[in-house]
Image 1 (cartoon, one colour):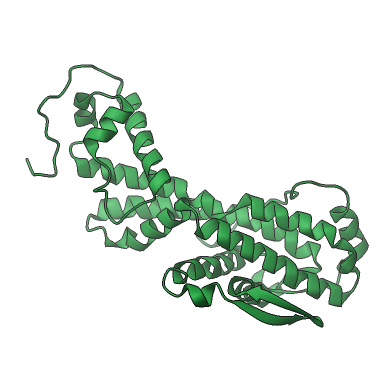
Image 2 (image 1 turned 180 degrees about the horizontal axis):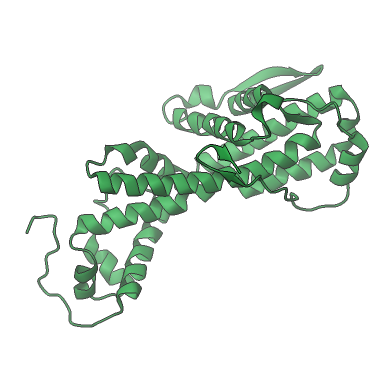
Length: 290
């Protein structure tokens, strides 16, 4: 038996259903990861402590996982399945929609729409940047994504990548709903060549926020700096996240010639206290639309 396998001395005799043991031990380990983040390894997760905290017998643990490595492999898949939702900060998304309602009257002119688009994307970028990149859940996602391809065991690597893919698809769906509401509300639409597919916009915008979050670790003075911009004749001081995020958004959208400003204003001024839902199109995520 290798040094990484279970040491079975002192195993108890209490029998607990296998599914209950699995759920309790994984839940206990997940709680620690969610509280402290994922490190390069699992040295900070001691099996004796996990078993004690979960309240399950050692003998049952040995029957389910043949080694500590087998348990940690399954834990990694659980982490990958659960970390992505934290990347979509729902409070920021709803706050963005509410902010539009406060400034709805400016949507009557092209200049007003351009001005409010700069401001609303800046608000969304700055709130989302601070909320997401300071969260333990996001740091865990980055750590897992960065190391997924380095696992030598192909079976483990494929399990982790598949779990990350599923999390990424859930994130795409959630953020597509956001953009399908916000972009038309301010008088814009996707470029026609994108065929109503918001996914490239979602991926590019998220990459900006997350890339700046990573860069913040080593060059915080640049990432956290404030920069002067002109917004339709109104000077403003904004963050690098706001400038970069707005530039990405503008690369994917164009003014909507069929925009009905009065209808949009009525919708935004109707007292809705949460972002309405426009569902994304059903699609095959291998790249072929249904």
